[in-house]
Length: 428
Ligand code: CMC
Figure 1 (cartoon, rainbow, N blue to C red):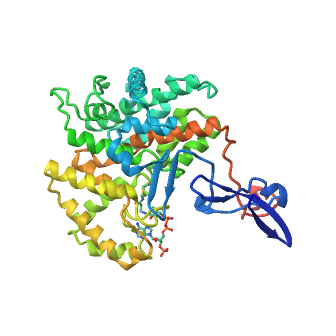
Figure 2: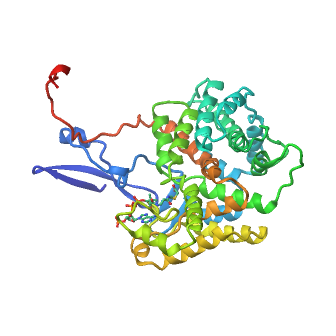
Figure 3: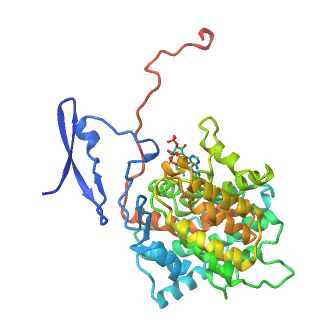
């Protein structure tokens, strides 16, 4: 017999079906709640207890520190796969064979050119503009240059829209950084792999040959894989909700980029480095900042610590911590900022406040450190997160459209004034 949950309101009982996911997660299906209760709704600020959809893409168990894409553990993918294979896996559901991967890459490369007029938009931004604002605007602008909306009922049209954005987005990422540095805007080098091409597009100087460093290629590949999806987080939910109005893919992604920008989400990697810099400028006293983080009258939070769903450890942080050590050793980086980071990490791991609240370093604590060692400017860190998250956003948008999900439209509990009469201005 299928299980149900019973809700009693004013002595009247209502039954709701329980649904169980493939990893035995249970949810109360309240689709009929308002209809059967005569308009009673639920309230759940921050959606901490609300499942917004069924999804077959990413499994995450925060208590046990598990993260899997389409059933594969993040540890194994980070070790054995490359970013493009993971992108294919997330979007289409299975790992590609060599022919499928070659075709996927060739199709992405064939769509990587951007209308040269987009450069005029880049030109119009001041150099001081934050790269996340520029990236969100340029992604949105792609809609103007590719106005045809995707026919979601056509597999071919869906595939074309996927390879188009995977081809163009890295160019936009590189342009946001080159604009900031005053470098000419180039197109990629189609003889290279996806991640190699990203690095060359970002760093190539107009008057020098660019030499790829395999350590950096490997580190970036891993970082992008670790960020590639994270189920229904703030930016992904944004992409799904915007897309649920049948706004186009580029518009939905642009909204996701804006959501990612905030320091409580993807902006944390930038905020971590800024915090470490500030501690260094202030004499490097990590204890002082630990005390500030614990002081309830001080809004300061230790950036890069804590997570909405990981209440044990962030499995991505474990992988990236190891990668960070390797990159720093291989590159021979000796950076006082890193000593401050290590000091903070040790203190927090042994501090009652952090231990009791299960606040562990998250992926962004370490990713900023690697990006810094790679020579990527601090303001670009969240842009790099967006580059990694792109396949996840696409996969979630595609799933939402293929499942024909209804428009996202939450309810509220109104707490404002009751009906009152309009006062003419001379009487107010
Ligand atoms: N420093 C100090 N105290 C903290 C921190 C922190 N970083 N994070 C949470 N707390 C405290 C918080 O004050 C609260 O204490 P109390 O129970 O005494 O009121 C308790 O821990 C629970 O915090 P919460 O805000 O209810 O937790 P949340 O699940 O709503 O927030 C979070 C999660 C990630 C927004 C938060 O931990 C935070 O602001 N961290 C810093 C920003 C950060 O690193 N964000 C990146 C997340 S990973 C990238 C991504 O996936 O987006």
